[in-house]
Length: 57
Length: 326
Image 1 (tube, rainbow over the protein chains, first blue to last red):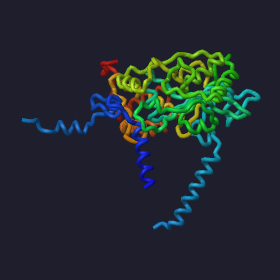
Image 2 (cartoon, helix red, strand yellow):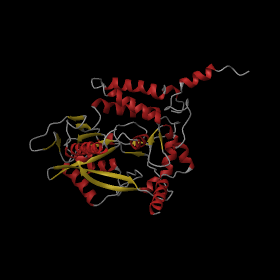
Image 3 (cartoon, each protein chain N blue to C red):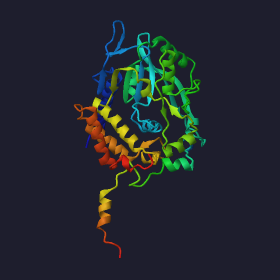
């Protein structure tokens, strides 16, 4: 039981340590999609797969 | 199947050998991938494993971690190194004084700057060399009063000068690492060689506002050693080419971190634990480090070119012309 309480409080401490308000979380925890992200390559296989699809009627 | 007793004995032997190797090894060319001493000790000077160490020397360093990159991206200009300190020889033994901050766990939901504690501390040069991934030592400019530099460092430590998580260089009652180093050098008559403005990147602006950091600029370690001559370059696990490649990687990431880019594109903060590199960034770094193991004969310009080629492969092509906001 003591271990459980300790683990729960440690979790609280760690979670509290990195609480971010929404505007900060939006720039730290979110990423831009490929094409707008200079650190994320566009996946050629996905592009190729898309181009292989028949055009919608 | 392996005999558990025998396996445990082998493990114990391996551990003991590792401890002996780690605990007893003196730093030097045998245990460091880069141990490049570029100055000669004068007569009577302290020679630390081949390094001519003198009070008043400056150490600059970098861990190559996500935190290092975060600090580097907060500043508008790409500069090598994110940390600095002062070497002082005490009783024939070189020590490093540095301003160091660390995050204290907290249940409160306040900005992280308010959870930072620490201040000026002292550690052995050996520990500093072993604990930092990239280290360079510089002599201060000619004419510097080394004893005054050392005295400021020692007195700051004795007075427990606290760490300044807000990077406010106008208030010397709290110091961040390069502010402390600059103040020590100023005590020895060495003027500061410029500052770097904070990054105008939109996501950095949001983060700085949340952290309460209002300073318009910071003192980069590279500015501190701008007029200094290098005494040596050291890295425990990276070869000279890998060191050069790391700084080229950092420069490339900085170049790509244009005003519109979210910090989250480069780094991420998991619900538990500290900052991490985004997987494509980590893959780019790993690919560069592995390739650079064979680049020891290359000129820095060629290393830069190859790092950009690897970046194009791992992170996608990037042309500055794409950037409308810069």
